[in-house]
Image (cartoon, rainbow, N blue to C red; front, side):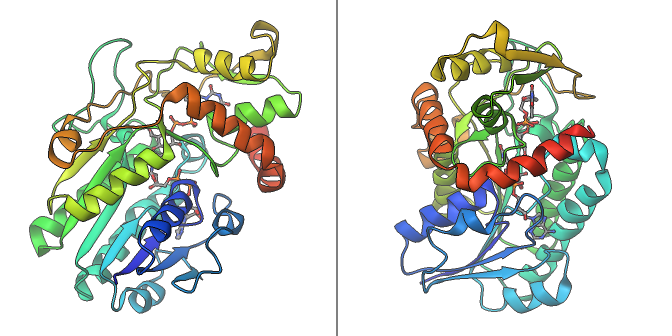
Length: 333
Ligand code: NAD
Ligand code: DAU
């Protein structure tokens, strides 16, 4: 039996992680510390919220008292909590600096104080900046070059986590993952926004020329990578985690999703103002985690994108109110 503190477990990846972990490791105990920001949804924890070995605590990772109390007796910390949306970081960088940098520092301090056996930090491929179209991939040796307040705050948190390993010997691991898709992703992110716009009879909104490339990965593949790193990863190491989509751009994804709904492409897309500093392309070389830990992405993009669309069609109860919050934010963007 292990005591695990998960931060941000009411968000997209955190809730998928807890659901997966408790099924596979029913003897473990999980405490989920989440502030329930606009991106945190108790409804995402419905499948496991009644389990005896699961406990939810509403609180802020920046709060010293709460973190000190919860960290006592914890074996493993899995740190997802963050402000995660690039567009919001352009509107209001401060909250990103506070949660992603100061919040991570607070967790590190108390993980050290209470001698946790593993601090796993969830990070992003965006810390590496952008790649040109069609050329190159990020790997563990790529220098950091973050270009948005979001990615800069995540890069800073990665540096802090590493510094606690080198300076204080805190047993850490880090994973930097590419774009996830799947159930329970907030409707402000690209794929759920497209699906729910189409369901509401609205056009799909494309930033700039739409020729931006992301390395899409089904969320359960990310969760499996985290599980493997926690079990077999080497202390102090960073692992990159990515997909198998081979340079599919935003326009091509819009085309696939519109086709699933039986809608014409040209008459259902609308080009809108681009994101300032929009990173052109991300692509991840995941050879290290494949060779050392035996991980690879299992979920085929076309099949699991279709399943993700089906999930949103069946679960309007989950996203209906959230959609209003997302579009209220976008109206002022
Ligand atoms: P999300 O925005 O869906 O969820 C974030 C969660 O953190 C929410 O439940 C929110 O309430 C909580 N939170 C925010 N501030 C908090 C605070 N101060 N204290 C406690 N809880 C707080 O994010 P996500 O997409 O699930 O991403 C989770 C992690 O994975 C983030 O660290 C993100 O940087 C990283 N990541 C995300 C992706 C992706 O494609 N979504 C890819 C790579 C890495
Ligand atoms: O690469 C990992 C990152 O992926 C994570 O670290 C972030 O937390 C996560 O939000 C995601 O960042 P992106 O900025 O890539 O994701 P987003 O869903 O915001 O946008 C994906 C692409 O779609 C990007 O090129 C912008 C574009 N876009 C987005 C929206 C919301 C559109 O063209 N139209 C839209 O309406």
